Amino acid sequence: MAHETSLPLKGQVAIVTGAGNGLGRNHALALAKQGARVVVNDLGGSRDGQGKDASFAQAVCDQIIQNGGEAIPHVGSVTELTDVQSLIDVTMATWGRIDILVNNAGILRDKTFSKMSLSDFSDVINVHLMGTVNCCKLALPHMQEQEYGRIIVTTSSSGLYGNFGQTNYGAAKLALVGFMNSLGLETAKHNIHVNALSPIAQTRMTQDIIPSELDGLFDLDSVSNGLLALCGENAPNRKILAVGNQYYATAQVMESDGLHIANSVDSATQIHQLWDSLSAPYQKASHASGPEQTLKFIHRRKQGSNA
Image (cartoon, rainbow, N blue to C red; front, side):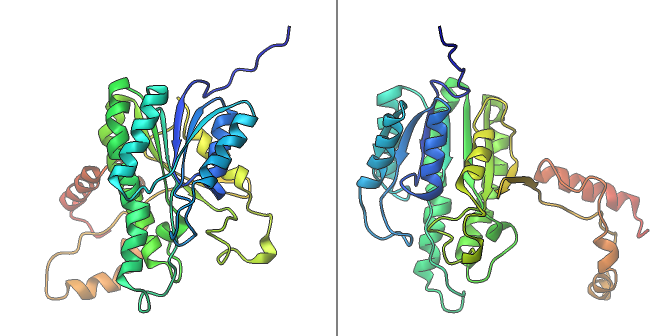
């Protein structure tokens, strides 16, 4: 009798937004391969968010089912609360729980800020940031009730470090890190972990960003394997996992040790003059929360030393 391999996510229910193409599609397939029952959400629009086509979500579901998995499609926009509510409703009606929420839906409207319309700025913010907020807001009560959940938001090096022509995208992606950090603090007591995935992969979203000579270097499977590490019972909480080309790293918000500079008419000048010194590495460079940073400043001020 053949031994059945244990699947780490067998029976769990995963929602993946923007799963009709690219990384979202690959995430959905990877989750199904690990035994998860997958809800494939996609509006079926173009890279800039235009249009609607139900065939993309259905095609991913068909592939999962052909491979022996379970999946259902959902066509709708993460920016529309009625669409998100129907996404949650169909998931609960079909499988009665939500274990994993992968916030992957996104669009691009790249242009330098001086040439970008405010509508292009706000549309990108709405999909990436508010789309994630909408999905988390409506899925969270179900995770809290079952005392378990894994939420993944999708950030980017454009948000963490900046990228020319992506002020809208970068703003949204760094905002998601702040959202993840605070939400993870609030939900930890319910065994709900919230993490951020920062991918580098070749998709239609990156076709104008990653040079063509690097074709094939940044694969989708590397990123989806990183995602899987954030989906299981042993997932960390409030971490940023950067992934690309089968290479994995964690990104962190770092802070220097800092200096005490007394208030005076010359304070601004002293700040400039002491810039290198006040930028010296801090022995505990990252903070577990905002209040921890406040306590650091209080402690260092009490020391009253410029040394």
